Image: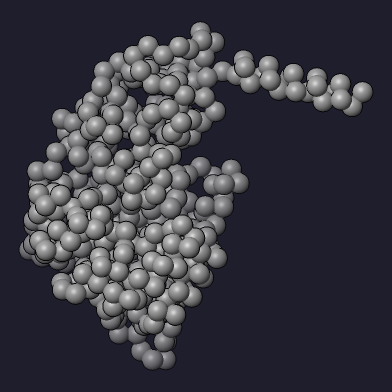
Length: 419
Ligand SMILES: [Zn+2]
């Protein structure tokens, strides 16, 4: 009897699986991120959250759910490799980010982060790298809430607390308040302390390690290597913030970092070394408006952006691997976080980087850096169905990715304005 019930149950499950409805997207224009080319009239068949087939004539049933995007440009979900969803300094009006530590609780940070994470998803970013400065591991709870299905959000590659030489990125904290920065940073000044910090972050949910060097002290090559070796045991990568000139970036590159974040002052030799070692640049290329929002004045904002345009141009010419990252923590007037972040595209355009290459840095190249290039970033069979659509051709004007009207995350429709 029991065997018979089991058999019956199996039959029901099997017939359900066979008859399960697939989703079919008719894509008028289709971005092939592997080759950086736009294809015409492709059909994508999606089954249980993953892509089953893609082509001009794949088989599908008339019972399948059809989504008609024949007048749209269909792309893999975008990726931003440098975001801080729980941070916003706009309302602090030029006060130091340190002020946040006493004014904003971890709970408030997590609530903001869940709202911003959803903005990323709704505007086409199906994967983000959350890169620290998120309070006392606030994002770890956002990731849990997404996993539990309480809220919707992108896939989040998560850094936990930033590992840095004593003092984090703060300046001028008086000794009576020593350690205030530990709300968001782990002080680590020797290879052993660095290894312990890596383990602590992983314990609290980190899936990438972020280090800062050159701000308050500079890590040696051995220091970076200690983090890289420890992280490697857990199959995760180390990324390093460097904004200063000189040895800090070289140590990070030779120490085995997967990426340099910012790299404002990288010289040609360092960009070449990154190419040789396969180290990515996550440039966070602020536009004039993004820089001006920091209250630095017109001249300085212009100079900073010009410097980034020059660095982007040199990196592209040399062939340094690049992944798209924005780093925006000030929402511009009238714009949400993603719209404010996409202002960095003005800098990419000013550097005359081809739109197709920029799209690759937002998809296949970002996926490679994040270690998820076998699962996401390309629309091919077995990949997750992270799919978006925009109204205008992004190869003609990259800023048309601001016109996302359809978002699918692992086969689930998050947004479809045409319905
Ligand atoms: Zn940042």
